[in-house]
Amino acid sequence: MILSKLTMFLFLMIFVFCGVSMGEVYKVGDSTGWTHNGHIDYKSWSSNKNFHVGDSIVFEYKQHMDNVVRVTHKNFNTCNATTTYATFNTGNDTFVIKRPGHFYFISSFPGHCQNGQRVDIRVPRPTKSSPSPSPSPTPPRAPSSSSSPPPTEPSTPSSTQAPAPSPSGSSEMLFSIKLWLSMLLIVVVAIV
Image 1 (cartoon, rainbow, N blue to C red):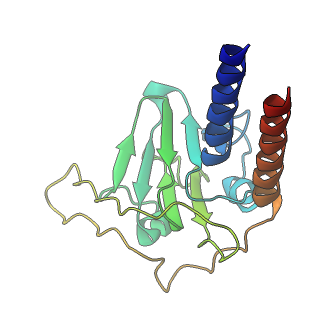
Image 2: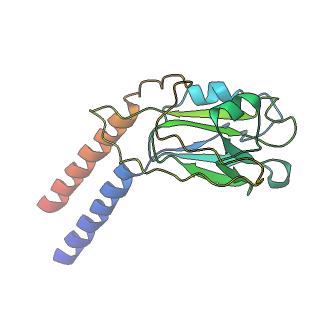
C-alpha cells in the first residue's frame, strides 16, 4: 500500500515538473509545413502565435527540395542567405527558442524566399508576472563562405525591429490549471 502511494506520488511529481516546464511546439505552416508551393502566408501564420522562451519551432519540408536558413533582419528583408547564423537541411528541423527577440528564417533555394517562404518569429520579453527561464546567449555559426564575416548574435532586439506583441494569457492560464490540478491530485493521493 505504501509502495503504491509512493509510486503514484513520484509519477505525479514527474508529471507536474515535465508538464509545466516544457514549451509549446509550433509547426511552421501548420499542416502544410515549410514550402514555397501553395499559398502559405508565413507572416500571418507567425503573427497569430504567442511565442515564448522554451518553445520549439519545427520546420517540416522535402529534404532535397528545400532548407531553412536563420539570417539577420537585413538579410531577411533582402532574401540574402550568404551570411547565416545557422542552416538546417534535414527536412525535419527544430529550433528551440532560448531568449526573447526576433528570429528570422528563410529558404535559400532560388526564388523560394522571394515567393514568400520566410518567417519572422517574435518572442516578447517576459513580463514581471510571467516567469521564464533565464536566456542563454547562442553563439553565431560561421558562414559557409569565408568571404564575409559572420553576423553577430544580437543580445537584444535591434532598433530596426518592430516591438514584440504583448503575450497572451493563455500560456499562463494553462500553466496555472496544470499546477492546480497537479496539487489537487497530490492531495488526493496523500489522503487515500
